[in-house]
Image 1: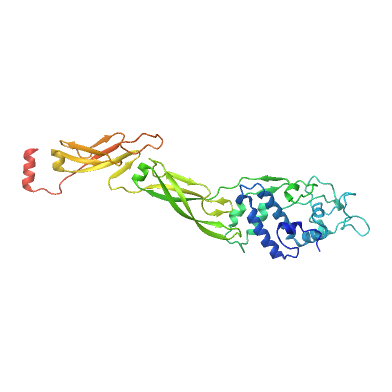
Image 2 (image 1 turned 45 degrees about the vertical axis):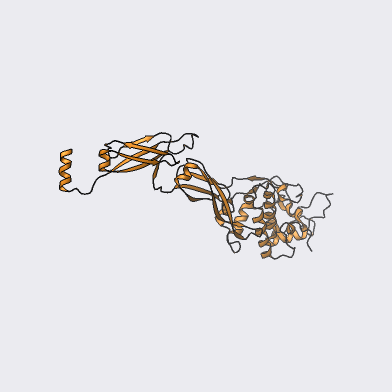
Length: 364
């Protein structure tokens, strides 16, 4: 019969649990309370330390034996009995002759952690615990269960770390109140990039695109599941290709949190227009006769306006005309637009008959 069940209760196991059951219970609890998965829960860091330190004691047969026989307070004191009048019995490790000696088998667990008075045989009160994040990384290294847990991610994730000072305060149900701790910066979660092809009309008018994504999550039993999510991606008028639209914490769940998802804008080819920065270019093909003698065209801009072009000629190959304010919206200057540029491409004939050549010589 054990003296107390506090540590067993923290891992939600029976005092008769096997070492394998203790390990599995710790893994389940550590994954549940890991601070990087509970950034909005300030109590998670303390819970994480509690289950880590409970596991460190119960997973060691000798420490577990001491805890079962004499309780947590005695173990934390390094085998030193409480002061007279504190309601505890004599030191169970004292020698039969009353010399206060400590067996060598237990002495190795009670190290000098600073701040405590000297106990039997020169040992100081208190004991050092492994940092919770180090214990977490070492325990998940073998990967015999929870295969989706990446050891490198676990190793790099920062968590609450116990200090080195000893404490005589009551545990009050938490190891964290008897240990100093500090919080290290957590690493950035993975960023996943996806292309977002858009038409020139979408980029001109602005639009909200609904994108269906699949993401992997951990359920309440820490099993990997896949779910669908719909994201509404806002496209501002005038947005350029290569622009990035970030959604934080919407992707696959990792030990450091959920992945960020970044959509990278791509521009689909347009049958009539080519974008050049904030300008839109439209090319008009002319045959040689039109270029020399004149021509007429009706051109529709991207926003549906008609431009009547009437040129008497000649039109120079490669020349162009610019129409201000009819191009793409300028995203950083609301209400302003680039230019609509008309370029002229003169199509020369591939062959001429001798008669045509002679007439051209006479005319030109």
